[in-house]
Length: 340
Length: 178
Image (cartoon, rainbow over all chains, first blue to last red; front, side, top):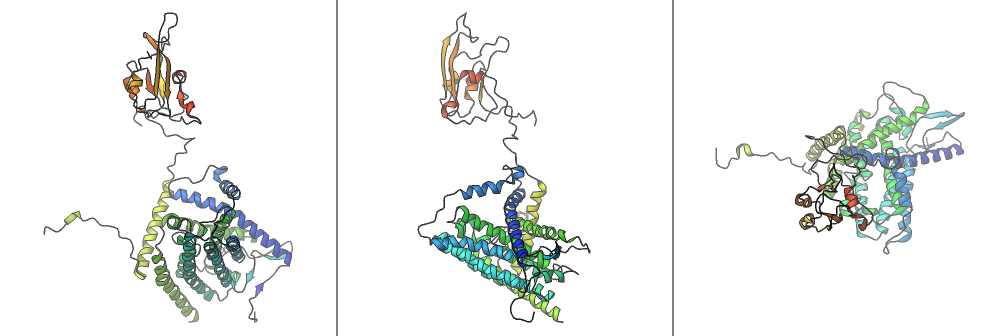
């Protein structure tokens, strides 16, 4: 670890790397449609109704019907749009979302068929930085999508998105620095291992709350969904998108939610660790992580069902005047406690 | 007590959290938790949806649905005598009656005449029930059926045979006192 280059922890030969990438990719894209149906059903319950329950058993085929519907739509773009950017934007959005998912550890290093396989995409020594890097690039998806559409609504949505993502990324990052200081490592697997004694949820509770609030803004979800703001911007940056590019944006959004849930699980809920010294066999780890992620996603949906959208000045004043000072304070206190 | 003192008539209005920095955040946090509690109570409450095609809301006995024409139960003769009072009472002008004379060998109704043609255009009917009120023999009444959508307008002109036939019981009826 003496070099200044980011160290990537490889245990596996290259072909296992490829298999892992495919498995994680496939699993994520299998979970995404279920997630959309889960969100809608849960939102329904929050409003005394059932939600989708007509297509297939319990309405589970709903996303399939929707994908078929979207995929068979005629592709179109406004005459004012910039063609190649208009097409690239959704790709950037989904690519960065998937790339960030590579970092979420779903389990410890396992021995499968005599090989040592880490149940995660990659284990880099710059953990959270990698995530924020891709979050930073994913904002180009929104920005290019909105700008190249050549529409005022899209443009306004993209502008809001830019300001919002930049403002809240700072607080989100600072909230994670507290964890990093406590753990003494930037590797996400290392952070999970450091939580053997106690999950960082308890010593870093303030950081957890700040991270959670900032995550709502980072994933453009209610009450910070000003980027979309259906009522005023008719959908924000993807107003002009239809068909499969629209699905790409939608999936990227849900994927971001999964990534944020995964990071929160890793950083604050002890990843694949279980409390009270329970040590299940290694193959249980991914299920533990997914279950913990589902807790976060459920909370995201719960909040969406509860809170109205913030006004734009409220969003900014909250981000800069409340969240950022709190995050800085949390970081300072943590640093002082760790050093002393 | 001064005349300007509102006394006990004061209503406490719940104010939204101010958008100030720290105190506003603190208040917003508390209000958020209150909101989360409110929405969670909705899950506990359960759904109130009626799954329509499978479940139906029962209608009241006096619900005014699709019309029915009646026969005498003992003789099997039609009650309608073709007086056209229902057509006259109809504000939507959707009933058409053409009367004809009963003959001893061809007896259809109990009276002197019968309705040779009795048509109700249900695409015009406003289900006001005036026909039922106007009828001197209780020959036409409003039934309980309300599922009458169809693919063409001509299918919505109900003839005498269709109105006389027992309707398929598709509508649950509310019991007395329910």
